[in-house]
Image (tube, rainbow, N blue to C red):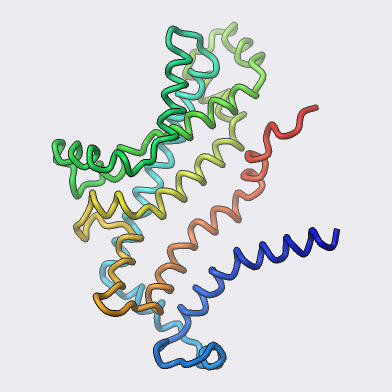
Length: 267
C-alpha cells in the first residue's frame, strides 16, 4: 500500500510541477540575469508581469475571442452531439450502422489531415478572419457523438416509452427527459470540448490572422520574438489562460468523475 501511495505521489508531483514552475516564472523579472535556481527563488517577487498583460490593448480582445469561440463550440457540441447520439442509440433506420462506422472512422483521422481542404472551404465561403471559421467547423465532433450514444445506450428506455405514450414529442424526449439523465456525460463532453477549443492554436492561427479575431493561444505566441522569448510575460499570460479551465474543473469535478466512471461498475 505504501508503495502505491508513493507512486501516486510521484505522479501527482510530476503533473503539478509544470504549473508551479509556470507560476514561479511569471512572478519574476530579468530572468536572463539569474545564474542559478537558488538565485531566482531568492529574488524579489512581483506581479508586474500580470499588470503588463492586463494593460496590453489586445489581451482583452484575445481573452474575449477565446471565450466566445470556446463557449459557442461547447454549447454546439452539447446540443448537436446529444441529438445525434440519441438518434444513433434509440432509432433503427437503414444505414444506422454505416453512420456509426463513419463516426468511428472520422475519430481515427488526424484533424490536421483536413487542414488544407478546410482552409480552401473557408476561403471559398469568405469566412477567413471571421468567427464563423473559428466556430462552425467544430460545432459537432465525432467523439462527442460517440460519447453521447454510448451514454444514452446505458440509460433505461422505460421513461422515454412512458412519455411517448403520454404524447411527448421527440424534442421533449431529448431535451426534457434524456438530457437531464445525461448530465454527467454532458459535463465530461463540455469540459473536453471547452478545453480543446480554449487551447487550440493551429486552426485559429490559420483561419484568423487579424488582431480582431485572434484567440488567446495565438496571441500568446506574440511573446516569441525572433531571437529571444519573453518568458516572464509569456508565463503570466499562460497562467491567466489556465484559470478558466482550472475553475471549471474545480466546480464540476464531481460530475466529471461520475461521468468518466459511469458504466464501470454494474450491479
